[in-house]
Image 1 (tube, helix red, strand yellow):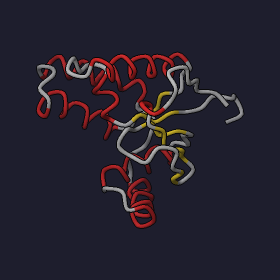
Image 2: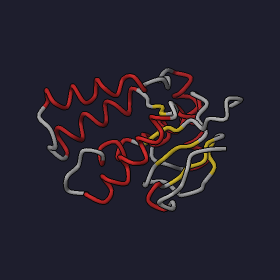
Image 3: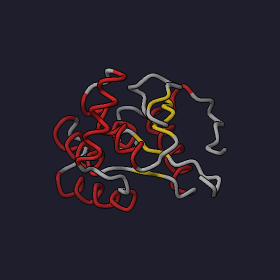
Image 4: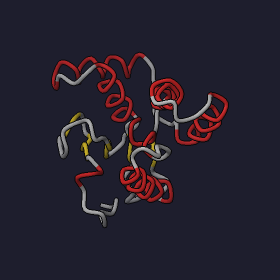
Length: 150
């Protein structure tokens, strides 16, 4: 990107950690990291990210009542700039065939790639792996003073 900013797609579980009182260290770390990304105006999410987040915080982990979770999800829509269309589905098929990730991870990776992101932040995928123009980073394997820059 000519502006020198590194665009970052953030996996759903990292968003969930920002509100999870059961994971205090991960909560602190992801909040710091996401604040850095938001301040740089480089956070990218997809509709799938927001839908998964809503489901996890309401049903899977029960961290919020529905109305509160809906407000939380709504606040995230500002960053929902990655597409989720049939072109993304086709790209997800290619990623699945080449790399063997689970289907829903492939869809998120395809959305991030299609949006032109540089980084895909996730603790669930292989740290430092390159996929379809993205570098996967596990924020919990980075130095505490890691900075997002070129």
